[in-house]
Length: 458
Image 1: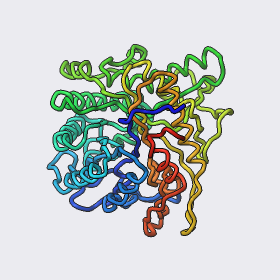
Image 2: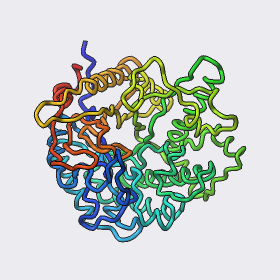
Image 3: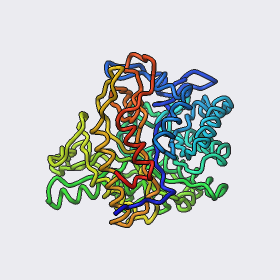
Image 4: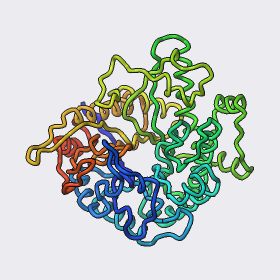
């Protein structure tokens, strides 16, 4: 029996600007914090990526050939506003106008993310990124301007990629922050600033463009207790309360969860909020809840030092799951955890759920002649799509679509081109750009066949 998803279901690909565009110093683009990072023994610099700035037509043709109807991209803040808080760059804005028009011509719906870690360098150097309220105001100005410019072309929006990373130590790497203070108070301050920015942008969109859709997005932490001990179970629940539901509560107008508020009181962490900002947080709502999902976690409470903040439990208590296979980077492969994530989100919030990043990184090379046989990737996506269908048809979840991550090879989040997620191979290595040719893998043809009938036959 076929389990047919709605004809309006979105199938597609997700990327960020710094991992795709290249053209780091063209057409008036300002520097971002990524543009000054040099390559390492196992990483590339960020100057070229896959050169999609010049090759987007070719890449969109490949997505269309796979029968994909959505492409989630990021608008590079420093491309459209070189200093982050100064004049807007019309040449940069024109690039996105061309990109959206090319998507629409192929029947591909754009989704835009406004921030994916690449802070304009000027704002990082002068204000330490989202640490400073000036940067919050500058980002909100940028976000509103992009919504105003592209509201006729782009219906679906998210503000921060993987917003819960700002509630973990990763915040000190992704928020344009370069001060030595990596305390909990610094973490909570930066995170709160991003929450305020999200609320202001989401409220602006709903007030001015009621036909548009905006959602919160996080890197969903699907965690299991190492054993059935009450301590393991409690700390795992606490971890997910802080790293998953705190963000979703905040972007749906529920405010900070009570456990988080009580923790802040005990730690003497205060949030400097005006009455206007409090009203913004109460007003904010989400049209959908998005997330990335690659693997699940196991938490061992016994390894967490006494007094550790729940935000940092994974720093100490993350252990290997003996029941699951992993990829070469130790990431577990857990389709059932994907189903569980979808169902838990929907049950808790009763809002449409949208997994917008899912995939597996693999070591792959091309001999210049033979097709890459990436059966492991095919199996990964097949099982995760089956799990999504179980969440829909067995658990009753409402799901808007399924977007893979980096389905045309891109550098990983750490800059490693050799960690490949794509159904299309891009012919370059970390230190040799080669010809950047796009070469379909076996999974390309699998996606082409599966998506031709809306995923009915896997």
